[in-house]
Structure formats: C-alpha cells, structure tokens
Amino acid sequence: MVIGASGGIGHAFVTLLQENTRCKEVVGLHRHSAPRLDFDDETSIASAADALRGGGKFHLIINAAGLLHTEGCMPEKKLGDVSYAQLEATFRVNTFGPALVLRHFCPLLDAQRSVLAVISAKVGSIEDNRLGGWYSYRASKAALNMLLKTAAIEVKRSNPHAVLVSLHPGTVSTALSKPFKGEQIGRAAPDAAGDMVGILERLTPEDSGGFFAYNGERLPW
Image 1 (cartoon, rainbow, N blue to C red):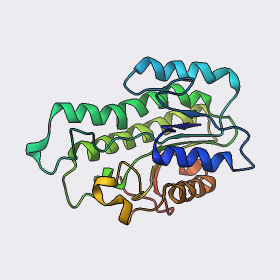
Image 2 (spheres, rainbow, N blue to C red):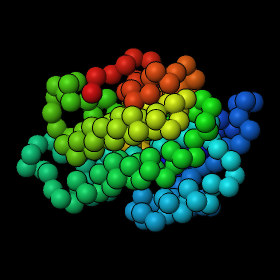
Image 3 (cartoon, helix red, strand yellow):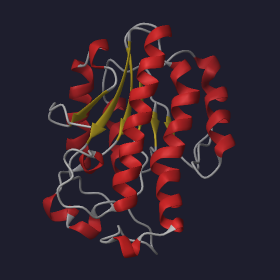
Image 4 (cartoon, helix red, strand yellow):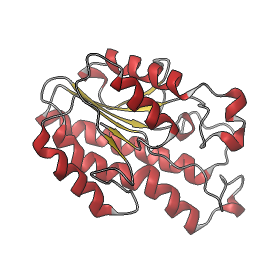
C-alpha cells in the first residue's frame, strides 16, 4: 500500500512495486482514490483502513505524502516568518495525518515480516540541524519521527515481526523540491523509490523505530 500515491515519490513507489514479481497487488491511496484518503479529512483515514480491512494483511505500507510549501507559503527563513497558518498546514500533512495512519493502518500489517515506512527528511534531525530555517517543515518531521519511534515500541508488543521506520529520500526531482533546484540537483523519483525499497528489503525487526537515509545510513534523531 502506498499512501500519497498521486505525488512524485508515491507514484514512483506504486509503479516500482507493480513491476515487482514478488508483489501480488498494490493499493495506491490519495484524495481521489477509492477508497479515498485525505489528510484534511480525519474520518477518511479511518474509513480507508476499514474499507481495506477485509482484503487481508499488508506486507508493506508506505506513507509518501508530504508538504514543504504551498502556493502562498514557502519554508520560513527566519522566526519573523513563522505563522499559525503555515504551522497548521504543514503539521496536518506531515505529522497529524501520518499519526492517524499509524493508528488505523498498523493493525493491517501482516503478522509475518511486514514494514510500515513514513517518508521523513534529514532536516527533521535535531542533532543534524546546522543551518536553521524551515521551521515548520523541520519541526513537523521531527515530530513525525517521534510518533514513529513511539508507535514502533507499542506495535512490537503485539506484532514483533513488524518493522516501523522513518526514511529520508534525499533530494528528489519532484514538485516538492522544484523551487529549490530539485530538477538540477535531485535524483529521479524512480531512482529514489528503488533505493528506498532496497533499504526496506534489508531491514529486520531489530531496526524497527529507526531513522534511515536512502543509502542505508542510520540518521541521528
């Protein structure tokens, strides 16, 4: 299952998994899918999980939805740019929605080895923050990492073979990175998806609750 399947990275994940002969079926969820999943509509998250519950368990669930900027808001460069509106919009997509995904979709993970991954970002690392700026995006990803880590501890008690991880995709050439020279410095979305699937295939239950980059590097919180 890929949540945020209409975005650049999400669509690349769907295509890659559909071409994988080991993958029997791929479910892509977004605002206009059936079932529908929209982080602006809390009830749609639970409804989507309920609609899929009868179809069996999932071996892989990826949340690829994310927000860095909108038409009216770019990442904050200084404290004077911080506002309720941007904080709320960014946290809704990057933190609140994924938190509800963890709540409603972790029970859909297979009892054998299964993986739930959320796309985070290295700029969400508090220890690695050396440049400052991008307040709401950094904070929303740091909060996402904490939610993931906490959920991994709980899920391990009932599903010890499940692996819950945060992933840093690197700079990818998508609409999210376009204002920041993503087309020039970023990797193609299919390449990024391939890198991350390769990492997910190698992870073990002992890695659950971790934060990993697309190249396998374990990142500091």
